[in-house]
Length: 484
Image (tube, rainbow, N blue to C red; front, side, top):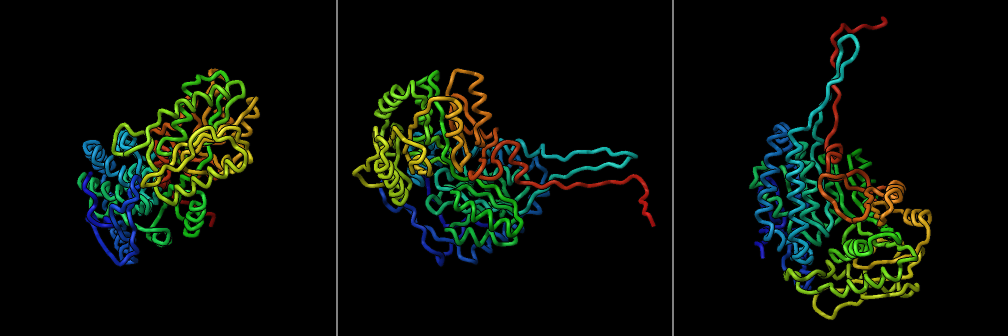
């Protein structure tokens, strides 16, 4: 296993420990064993981190975009060189199988660092010519200190998705990872320092909700970027608004996948598997409401159940394993509660949904059929491997029901009818609409939600707007006049 971080926090370019903070046990989800013990930040630790980020920002912001980008690109190269070591640590941190982490975690983080590293040198303003010789130019400037608050499902990726655009724009950052998966972000901080980021540019502070709230309320923080649940997002947004701070919120979802009877069945089944069971269902954009047109419903369910038999549940460090445990005992309990709710409300459990009798936090992927819109499992985000299959008859019905949720993160449609595919994509109330695929999130394209699923966009050039501010400079070439 990759060498673990040597202390709880990373501040001003070095590890920092303060055992006065509340203990944060790190538990390996595959066995339930404690593999590390960190400590939540004390007020002194929080002050040190914010002070370091505040002190470092003016000089970092004064670097050229090309110089900042060079650091990010070096960090991307180091991440790729150490992909296996980082992937092993990610597996220990989250419980996700190595077959996933090797291709989806540190690699995605490296993609973000490389992309925004390349973009950094191109961040310029514009010249606006006005009558009589006057003109305006604009400057794109950093916001200051950015607070990142991470979720537990993709700790390395989430930290890099936030840090890359923030640092490219000249901001400095304090990142608070999820207390459930706190290890990998510390290693990312190490790598950024090794790549040439000056001390204080990227800091990591551990903690629970109170630590995040304390940093968000601090006047030294100019922006918050959260990946988390809707209830947490509401609290963060309210706090940010009180201080008139910028906010990017990437929140939960209850996303639909709509499968028409002319769809490629194998492709649709594959998308349903990926969109429900990958990472044991612990992905915010998962398509957990699968609407299948009645003409192919039974064929879809039969093929899906058959494919599910090929899932390999086992040691996450074995690259043949395709299903890992839930991230924690608490999350396993939540998911089991939803499975019981689905049964009690009359949904048909086609396969899975059983707790596995072994150490760790294991459940077999659950497939429910005959689900209706009013069932709890069709309305609430489960964040576990529980798929709900619902019947529909017409395109209009499918679109109305797909949009019948407070969430709006993603949506997918499977059909060979080109015009119908684009009608559905236009009609979906979601930040990302997929046609004949699902859950692909390359760093070159915007990612974010509508409705209760969030505010702002991550990745792509769109993220630059959320990590910088525009200054207008009016230049007069004429004498100034007044009426008196």
